[in-house]
Image (cartoon, rainbow, N blue to C red; front, side, top):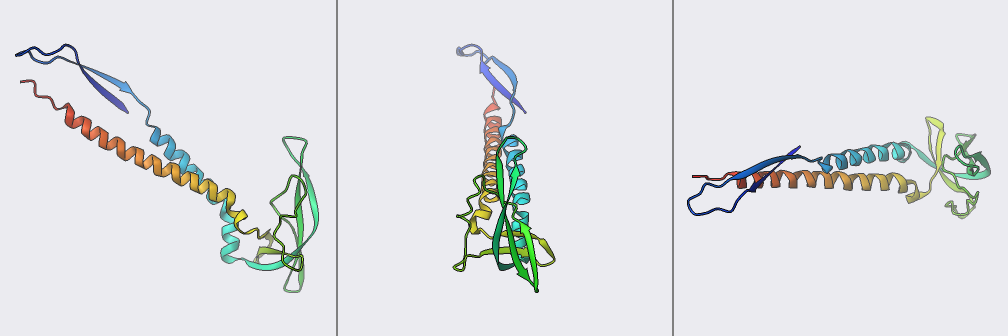
Length: 180
């Protein structure tokens, strides 16, 4: 986008025609970058939360029991992640799955548990391996944050663009100079 600057060269004396210097400068519109990042975060939020959305809309809830923890080595460091292995019953079958969410310490005391020591499992009855522990609002923390921040960036991008259009219109009106 080009920005035009108009400056008066010399002070006006009575009866003189004004003299102006017109310069063009290139400016990058930050609203475009902000808008692209905002849209990217909204799309990322959808992909991060799509499994949770699907399970909340079409899945079933049932009690499950954590029977073990699967220790997985990190690919980038020498740390480990611990994924709970959960068992639940559905239609007289016992289903076992490894929860995709992990803990770096192996301490799953914060996993929501029912009064009988079980935890609530969300699962897809058509694909029994698609299951997660229902952590309530914690399931929405990462996708919700990404969506909220993306929506904020997209909104500020739209606001920035509308303010730029208003400024351009005002500048165009002020550029009309009568030299006679």
